[in-house]
Structure formats: C-alpha cells, structure tokens
Length: 286
Ligand code: PPS
Image: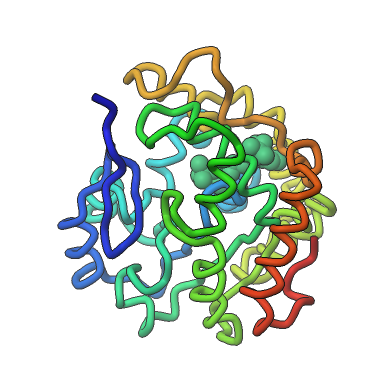
C-alpha cells in the first residue's frame, strides 16, 4: 500500500520526518532568538541556494563547512523531527529554515527581532520544480501527471499548502525592519548585488574577493557537485528514486514555459490575478 501524506492543520506534509504533535509543540514553545537568521520559503523557491549563501557569508567564502556538514544540519528545519532536535542544542547565532506558513510557524516569531529572509520564486517555476522533486523522492505521495499536480497546486493541496496563502501570510511582515524580501529571479539575474544586499541586511562586511568566493562556492555547478548540499545523501537512506531526477535539476528561471500548455498558462494567470490582486504587483518581479 502506498503511504499517504501527513495532514496537520489542514495542510499536507511529507510522511517521513514530520510529526504533527511536534509541530504543535514547536508552535507553542519554540523560541526564536534575536540572533537567529531565518530562511523562509515555499518549497522549491531556492531555499538551499540561499542557505548555502548564508553559510558562506558567515565563513567569508570559505567552503570548509559547506563541504563537510549536511545543509540541513547547518540550517535545521524547525518543522522536522530531526531539525527541531538539532535546534534545541545549537549554539547562537543560529541559521533556521522553514517552509511553514506563518500561521503555524512558532508563535514567538511575532515578538522577535530575529532577521527573516523570505525568498519568493515565480510560482509557475515553483510548480514545475515541485512536480519533479516530489516524484523523485520517496517521502511524499506521488502524482501521475503535471496536469494532476497543476490542479493540486492551484487548490493548495500540495505539501506545505497553498503558495498563494504562504506568500500572503509571510508578506504581512514586509514592512518590518527585520524582514528582507528576495526573489529567486533577482538572485539569478544579479547574484552579486543580491548577495551584497543580504550582507547589508545582516550587517556583515565582506571584501570583494570574499564575495567572489561566496559566488563561486554557491554556484549551481558547485552545489550540484557538493554532496553536503545536493541531497544525494538521501540515497544512503533509500529516500530517492535513483535515476529519476536530481535535486539540483536545472536552476533556471522560466522553465514553466517548457512545461505549461496554453490552457494551463491562461488558467494560472487568471488564478494568480484573482488570488494576489490585493498585493502590490511590483512585489512580483517575474
Ligand atoms: S526545497 O526542496 O524546497 O528545499 O528546494 P529549494 O532549495 O527551495 O529549491 C530547489 C530549486 O532551486 C534550484 N537551485 C538553484 N538554482 C540556481 N543556483 C543554485 N545555486 C541553486 N541551488 C538550487 C534547484 O535547481 C531547484 O530548482 P529547479 O527549477 O528544480 O532546478
């Protein structure tokens, strides 16, 4: 029998590594410290790219840590069983990652001055990336076709829920000083300037040659070759369908154009307009 996704607060989660009771406990009890830096994304928005950049900013471009410690240990996911455990004993200043919608993220977020970086990506590319990734791994219910996944995505019935709700929820913090909004598209188009923007937000001063190293060591190719960042370690615990894809898939903007039919593109535009009409459209640079 195929395993079913876990459901918590009306939202689907992978059936490996997640526990609704623990997420509830984290919501009530987990304390976000002022020194913490949070990477917040809807899945497949470039989370791991940003985490790699943050680690490298801290090490001033030195790749020793990113090549020896798995990325999920460097910046644990508060919603996973292992991440929550790791965070309990992790020394400050911590990097923390999450895909949780804000309303189920630990409630201490509303009283902290911790720095929050919200990374957004064109949801059409998020959809395509997610379709491939969730069928590549063995811990999420598979979907039979892109069309099936397309409908589930628009209805918010994919893991971690609705992209539209996720963005609405987290962007409610966008006027706070401790909140930085970034897009995958700007990171892709002008990586250096975006890294400088992140440094400025974090109050980190890097020399130009240190920024060069951050750029080099967080490039798509470098991450693809780094087994601490490319999720190939999941094969050791039999969690991926070998030969059926890769975490570091294409790393480009606009791949949706190679996948959507005209009908799907029109439907997506319509839903996007309806659901996002209340937000300033200049927030969405794609
Ligand atoms: S996850 O599983 O939700 O944490 O995935 P996430 O890290 O958010 O997103 C994975 C996509 O990001 C792309 N990626 C990169 N693009 C450009 N440069 C770098 N360095 C990079 N690292 C990861 C990755 O290829 C996934 O996108 P797709 O479109 O599937 O290629």
